[in-house]
Image (cartoon, rainbow, N blue to C red; front, side):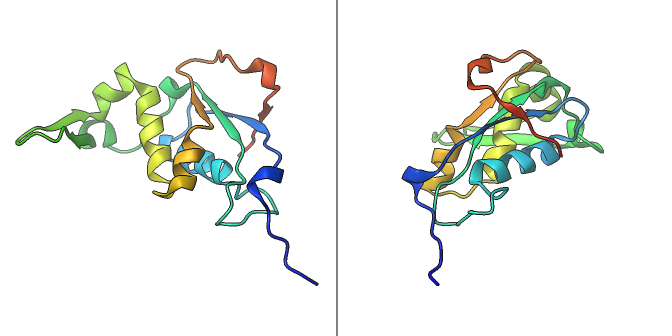
Length: 142
């Protein structure tokens, strides 16, 4: 008996909705990263891009536990000398909650072409409305 190896061309991709309202940002991001990789499927293989599409709604209502709103910062460097930029998560969650969720999911995916390809299957929305009703997404319970 030979071992089954999935191929990226034969993977059936489903659409899932994750509701982030009232849930910790990191837990929603971890579940989204697992679905994007395909770890919820019995045919998962780390070398194959077999993940599904994920829609995360209510990003603005995701919560950060503890003192993370005041203590946590998103930092990045522009490439110029002395240009280390930072923004507090309190401000980031107020202005761009989709960006905070995107950063969390991206940090949980591998830094390879599979991880970059998986990020293209992620859709983030601030509120409860989304534009992907034509794909007939299923609600993912976790």
